[in-house]
Length: 358
Image (cartoon, rainbow, N blue to C red; front, side, top):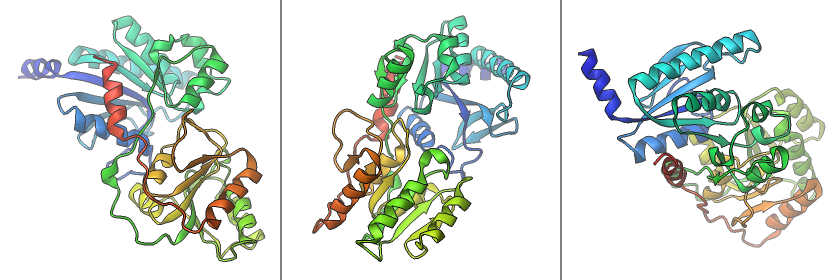
């Protein structure tokens, strides 16, 4: 019986996705929403493909479970360093050896160029498997030691955006052979609100990288022109108390609502009620919230210009002053355009990734 099951498993092509973390349950919609949407799209568009996810660090407890019918093997590394991390890499290697014996692997896909890419690269080379690393943004900043340890070829790298591809070349001298942007699942969006009662929305982790203190500075500026301006920030993180203090200090309690982390579907609903989505992060590859906000009908103002080509309703700016003036221009328009803009459907990312393994 077991022999028959093993034979059946080897008949189906299997893609192993390596990631630092993944949602611990179907209900954890706020954890890595881009990765969730991508994996679901792979499963929906390639139903005969067997997908297995191996996570290095999160969930923090070692376990095997299913997420939306997809097997996940969590090694529970818990972001520990030195010897515990080396031991975890050994566990990952053993896990991949087992999967390679049990399944017909078409290759490995590493999300981010980090320890996943390091282990994935050498395992794939040892077993003559295809391996690609999807560069998602933070991993191409200076100081990533894994580029030195792996010395990847450009053909093995997938850049999330033109910006990421350029950063990889400038910082590590390697040009990714593929640029595949993330996308959105349009089926997750409802009919939308009949009115836009939120002037500005922000969404993301409340960490220094996201610069939500800049968001508050912008609201303070705009309040001089629009005293009743209504803005919302949804997210959680270590900066929450600092941001709440800034809101009180600038007397913006009636202008800025600081929500906690909310489910992904609720974030999409808030986007459909918003006139503008404000993205104050100082470094991003191509945040999925930008694509979602555009499809939600919001104008988007951001410090990031992910693609070289112009994207409708996406307004990249340089610095706080330019950001304030761009928002002022938008709100002073007689009738701002809040029509949905579909830049990339997630099915495009799924098919582009799969073409690399054919």
